[in-house]
Amino acid sequence: MRLHRNWVILAAALVIGAGAALTAMRYLDDRVADIERRVEQRTARAVVAKEDMGAGEALDHARVAVRDIPAEWLHSSAISPEQFDRAAGAVLGFPARRGEPLLWSQLQDRRPPTLSARLASGRRAVTLSVDEISSIAGLLEPGDVVDLLLTVRRNQENLSVLLLQDVAVLAAGARTVAAGGQEGAERRYSTVTLDASAEEAQRIVAARTVGTITAVLRGPGDRAKLPPLRRDALALLGLEQPLMRTAPPVPVIYGGNGAPAMRAPLPEEPENLPRLGRSTGPFPTATADLAASVNSGPISRPTTSPTMR
Picture 1 (cartoon, rainbow, N blue to C red):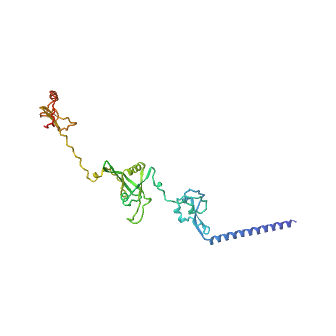
Picture 2: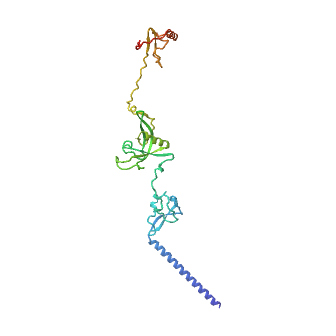
Picture 3: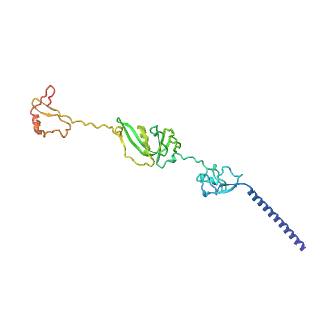
């Protein structure tokens, strides 16, 4: 009985060992087949996310990795390692899961910055209408620096005023980037947009309602400030007319019937004319003498015109 039990245990052990051997052989065969398939299958390298990333997050080198992925499973718009420099810094428009290849379609559309994005804090963009002359024959380009001259008519005179200096051009027409091409190529636009402070923008808007604004182009690197200029057009050309000096009024002396002569009173007498008390002629030499002569009797005035002496 005891011998029979031993044979049973031995037979069970043989069966278990044979099963384990068969299982091991099958596992090894599967692994070899998988390795052979990987060797035979073509793979491609792609950029994958190291961690889950949400929409709005920016891509950088620290948050991605490079993996070999079967080419037949790889999406056509996947980002390759050679292309990632162009995608670095871009913002995800859709979430990315860990280990998944990153796609170009997941990135937000990188549009050029708006005009408002080009303005520094506290600055304003103000637009002027221009013609062939005020736009310097259409050669003003974004990035140029100009001075603004205002010509206005006031009190029957044409005045020229240096309105603003060192003003940057933001846009020429709808262009915010300088146009390339051959020199002298024709460029048509009817407005220019300038970068100005809030106060300067108010002055430009007020100036364009009262006169003509002309842009004067500066050279690269020229930031010199000119003295304020406000002169009439003739003075700028050296054609101003000299002021006419008016002669002092001629004194009128009344007399007649032997009465002492006296001058008509003047509002203001020039210093070079004789005054009462300093005359050496027939005039009274003092105020008392003048009063005595006047009180001695009335002065009769002729019916005819007075005689000039």
